[in-house]
Image (tube, rainbow, N blue to C red; front, side, top):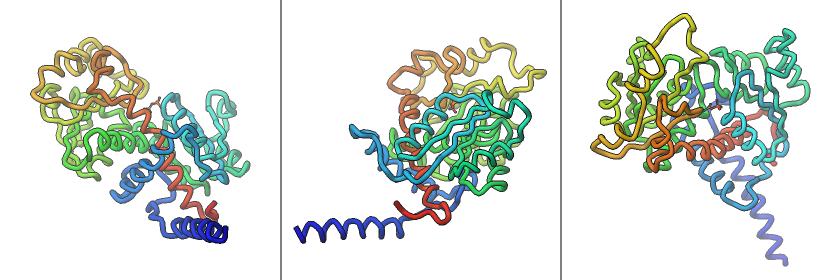
Length: 336
Ligand code: CP
């Protein structure tokens, strides 16, 4: 009995000691991948590995964040990111409040800072925000005391998408280092592309972007990526092709970037014929939502080379890791 009591006390002390000596992120917010170090990314991945184990158990929940309240503020539409964050928060036992701009007082003219300050007055510790304006997450981090997670800010960054993408490549191919990744599609209007470029390069991958000239930013080479306008050459070069959607909602409606979706699909759409013409097997990714028959056909999206649903599954574990690690950085928070 005494032995059991001693053992249980030492394991509690061990847990506290681990908490004090655990490696930490170099930042209190997740505003973009640009601000993370490669060590931060590796730390998120190893924490996500642990949470992936938890998600395989019959009870997919840990009590780690029962002292934390998270507000999910979505000023733009979302299916995957929003559900994935909410599930991640609930799996960590955090209290969760959800805010959708469409059903809020934003419609009555309330500013972003006023909206957020009102929510924070209700003792919220962490804010997950999606917003149409590039830089909105960084702006918010300078105005409020809560930890901020960027869930996509306009055409700028979508850091958790890039983390789950790189995590899924690591899972399928063993590592990201040395791998060749082609990002195909509307690079100009894509926050996924920029965050992926930063993340993959920090982990030692080579990155190529491929698409029509009108959808590739003129100065993209300054980020150290290759540029290709011939889809077959890009596919032949890469180990992984990440097929992006045409971001119609962010394009200038007065500009015609390509003649028609049909022509786009003919030149930049990935179908079975193109896949089978390659000299090697590549991994297919897509951040979603998919426009079947435009950037990717159904037989490719649903093939065994596709890891699209693995990306979605891994999103929960990766977001749990991000939230958990940022919660350790909240000043004055006691380990529970
Ligand atoms: N990948 C992604 O951001 O999807 P949602 O827009 O559905 O969140």
